[in-house]
Image (cartoon, rainbow, N blue to C red):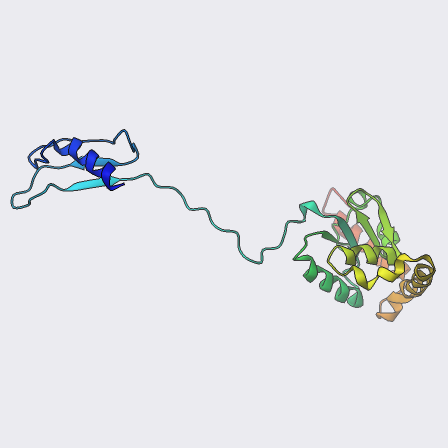
Length: 215
């Protein structure tokens, strides 16, 4: 690098480095990015002033540590009831684990924006009856199998691994079926029929100010 600067300097200031020259250079063959500019000699100074101009590049901001992975490449979609307090404990645990994997897309069926069309045609009443999950290929899984596949995607497959065997799976689904049937009462909520009626009423009120309604 020093030799290149020396060569460029000799070109700009002359063979003998005379400070009286007023040569202006805009680069050298070896490195066109550097520009050497000579200015008139100032009395009392031994050498002229030189300015070196180099190309600059914009810095690229590094990705923040701990940034959650994008859910665009989700492997399974979890349809959950955001108004179920016990359900939300499990959802929050899975969501926290999912920060490392980005494999689960969470869809709150209690939201006014829930769309059956975007979820394999599964309407609110159907998904309120039991747990549903949708794989990226469109396959719908329910009951304990849904839990097993969700847990597998966040590194907790061992929790439900035993339910892969049919006798155990049958018993597990039966137990879950009882929970699903009475979960509204257990969590202090009104029966499903009342929940559906209230949701329908709220939808009518919202639709009165909107052209698009989703049930």
